[in-house]
Image 1: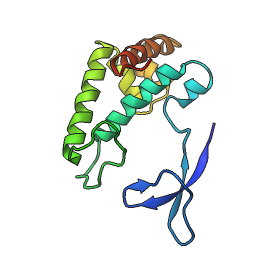
Image 2: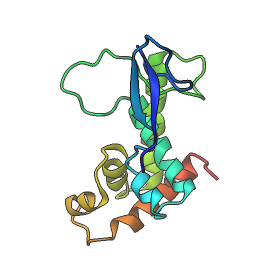
Image 3: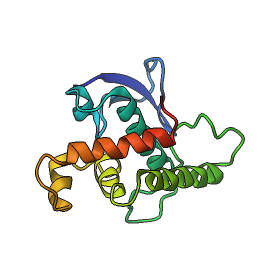
Image 4: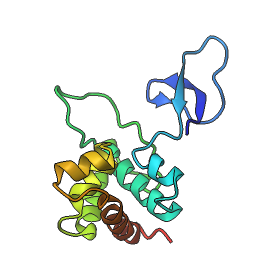
Length: 156
């Protein structure tokens, strides 16, 4: 499912909200793009588990944990809500701490599937092959892991 919207392009990334005014740079953004959106759209994940995965991915991106080839000087582009009054470096450290604690709450052995599917954006069949699991077992394990992450983030 695609939900394309036109957003004004600012130095901090696409601006949420109104469409860009004439003469400003803009970008088309797919709001439905998420590693978990396919599973959620087909009913394999309920809203609670989907939200937990999105919170985990947001902390992963906010902490800037994705591999990069060179030094990154760009600012964190994920808006924060509960980190008011913190410097950008403190927000990044807080996100890294939340990410680490969420993976620890998922439990040993479940962090692999969470990282591969939610953070790295691998498909579930690719993650199953990489982890040497039986085919079609990943959905169940991912649901268990996301349930524990939802409990960690207190998503009701």
